[in-house]
Image 1 (cartoon, rainbow, N blue to C red):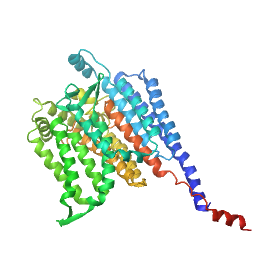
Image 2 (cartoon, rainbow, N blue to C red; image 1 turned 180 degrees about the horizontal axis):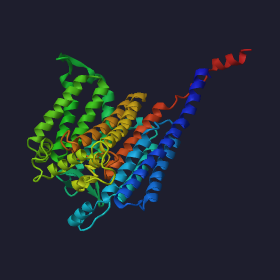
Image 3 (cartoon, helix red, strand yellow; image 1 turned 135 degrees about the horizontal axis):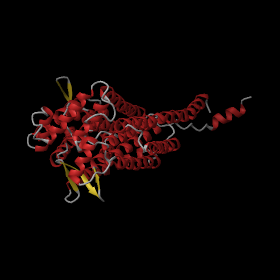
Image 4 (cartoon, rainbow, N blue to C red; image 1 turned 135 degrees about the vertical axis):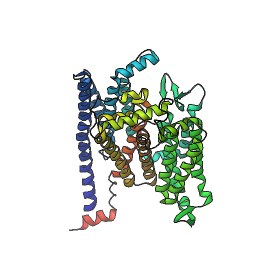
Length: 474
């Protein structure tokens, strides 16, 4: 065996434990910081340390420990930052949801509407435990992400079925005008959260095969290379599907997410800027067209343009108005955990608008800290895509990362008044089992791809001639 091969094997053997030890050290901070925040909320609201502190700390620590052990055993070369970052965001989300559970105003509102109040934090902790189990299953059983390439077109069918489920009579549920939920066994599930992963498999497999044809340009116009007419078919199809989702389900967020993810993956596959320009133009045209006759979308656009003009008449205006005031009252450093009034937003405070609580109680500094955590996940996902050795892995990783980035952007932009409200949930922070399950699965897939990308290549077997030379050599 050559000295270079020996050196590579030695580096690989040393690199894996080093990554996992780094991950373990970061996980300690990822558990301690939410526990500290939990104590702060208890002291601010009740002037005492919460009675559930030990249970919360042990529970979050066990979840993080199980995830670490599984990654150390089955994906030793994986990125060491993804698991701690997801754990930290999930833990802080549990604290924010528990903080809103303590609001007397929300409790009275729930009792008035439903006759009783049920705390959301215990349910979210249960959803987080199920999500970690889902994470473990993906890491253990998805031994090679390239297997998913075999199911390219099956994934397309699966994604369409998931998107159409909320339209099935008796199964779908209309929540505040959006038909994005289904009721199964007493639980509400949002199929679109899982569809973003399934459809990323289809996009990656399709674009890997068709990228050369899509990269061809027939003419140049105003500095842009325009694709051939027959190559516009895929983007027209995805555009049409996103419009159908927007029209029939009144779901602006999901349609933006799917179409944006496809355009990102299309640009990465072809390296043609023209696809981005065409995609943005088609997205804008579709959104304007649908908003002209869809009352649900139109109400959200009006609330975005001037939330205080219809504050007393529209629930959409009232929510975005309260959200904007929450960010404004937070200032630079915030009012302090447990000392804000974001609970005035109502039932959406712990789901769609949970980032408003961050803006008010942690201020601009806290908002930037959360954006940094999300940016680190996005950066590690992009780095994983760059490190992947196979085209399918590259496109799949960048597709999942792009979907995650788009979701953070549309949610944060909506609650801050930058873009119209979409109704999606902030990854890992907001209340909801579908969201936390899907995002933990997304992180698990990225960990699997990064492990494959960073795993040292197997050493080539020595040739018989080389062995004979070593034996004969004096």
